[in-house]
Length: 484
Image (cartoon, rainbow, N blue to C red; front, side, top):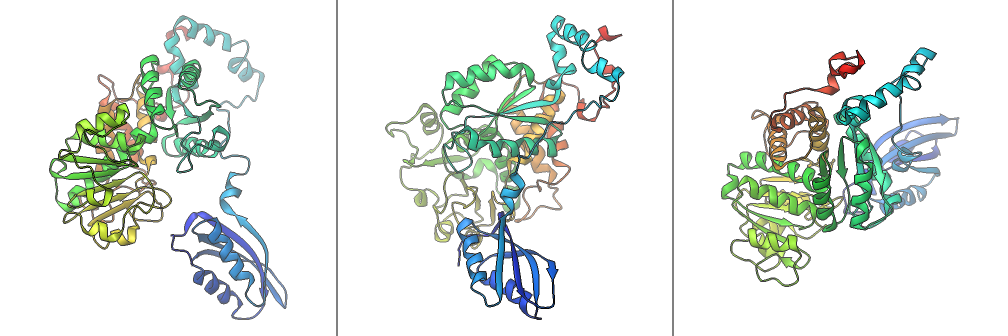
């Protein structure tokens, strides 16, 4: 029996032949339930007078748990397991995205305008005025999702080829939730100078750069240098997207428990890219105090062998210069935010936090503390899992952030945009909906992306609201004068 929570990410479909008696199907579902999995579908594929062929679909906790479920089914009398399909691998066959033309190209007339000879006039218009590339090419609505594969999810440094499924998924999310065309750009190098050079070289084709799954501290330098050298926004989702969503969720969690950000003490486990960005945004918003914790312990003044980023955190957090372990750090704390590793804390540790405490255990797939144990003591609990209440997921932020930046041809991503996006996400959950299990909107809430995009547009100084995604493709007002 597994102690982990089943998830759709480890869903399997098992084709099984069973004897055709009244109780055979019930025995299958009982067996799967006793193995700790969750049956999500059961379909009869075929039958004859003696046998029934069924496809049983269930959520399991991981690959070994799936094997255990199958083994227990095989041990049942009258059960013949014919085939086991991993539904996640099936979804990824051949990749998850494709290129589709916006132009039909049905006639010679259309071909002459989309390609030669008509396209030459558009090329010359851009050559004379490079800014027209934002209006007359895919740059207007296209983002590069750039990774070197050095920090992919919780899997570590697995390289660019293995990072592709994640980057494809990111591109699919951009399109589904923000109407943004995004494309994976995985780089077979982890040299900072080379990454900066390559991204700068390909930037003319894109309206924004989304850095993804690049290990700290290299990601900080890459982002900073690209911001200096490019005239399009550079957004590191592991940093800024996570920080925006955490601030949004914390804003509402504090509303639920009746506390103010400036009065609370926060403990953050994980001082990498995500944790550092979260802490910087909380400090910018006026948090009372923060203790940052990582593998080497609580970051404090006088700690040896610290990176430049950690030294900055030590100088700007941890008012009492605490230097102990993580369970000790959260004693009396109002908020725990984990962006680190699984099973670092127990329910007993959470019990020693302040009254009406808030726990965001965001390590995936296994959080820093079992959410079921945390709920016995904390007033509000959130995770990064889709099968738990209060899922804090970056898809709440990055599609709307880029939608807004592309709409106004923004040249950079700013801290003011981050704060505006966080407020917009928090406010989507109205006062009449707010409670301990609803502090953040669903990723499928249709109000989220428009709200975030509008907030981003408003945050761009002097930018008038102008949603290009809503314009018809024949909009003449957006065409350069030289076309008339």
